[in-house]
Image 1 (cartoon, one colour):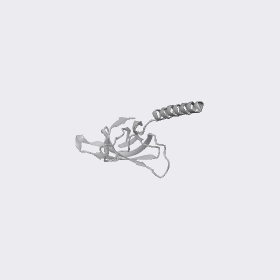
Image 2 (cartoon, rainbow, N blue to C red):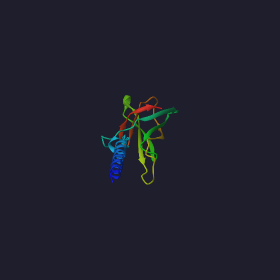
Image 3 (cartoon, one colour):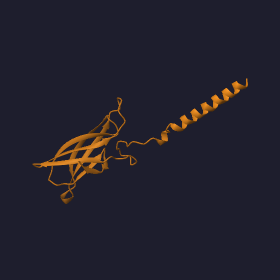
Image 4 (cartoon, rainbow, N blue to C red):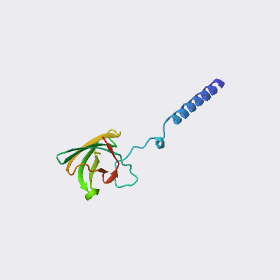
Length: 140
């Protein structure tokens, strides 16, 4: 009878050690990294940088670029316009990021591309917005 008590005690200690090891090894939800969200008019949202390339020929700017979207189901479209007047003129590239939520998507940041054209004077500075929020620009 004494051997059965020792056996049960040993089994209980081993079960507790395994349970404790499992609890300590599983990451908690608060420790998982957060991914950037699509820009909206919410000031707490992170706005990704827009990579832009401007090709000018015969009065027409061909603007191509890319932006990192939150998942593989996101698409980007762009519309360019001339803003400001005189020496303060610039080309504004308004990028719209949309996400298709009807299917299953890989939830990893994904590079999406866009292209647009605009007739305007040469050597104008470039500005960009994503879903209406000002974004930083980098050369591509």
